[in-house]
Amino acid sequence: MLKIKLVPGENIERALKRYRNKVRNTKQLKNIRNNQEFTKKSKEKRELIAKAVYKNEYLKRNEE
Image (cartoon, rainbow, N blue to C red; front, side, top):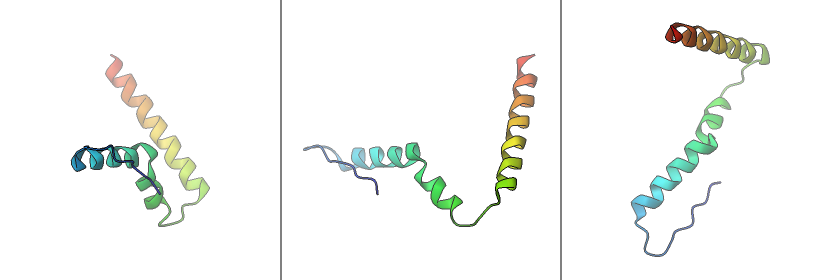
């Protein structure tokens, strides 16, 4: 569970913004979504390789 300490006199909007950033930086929401269904290790590896291939081709195209 994430905790945000409020600074005396701090605006609640600012505290909510810090909380949202902390959630995003810790990738907590992504972990929750990934845990909703099981994915096999082989499928994760295939997706990781496909992502790397796409990124490599994308960088090659934009390099020229």
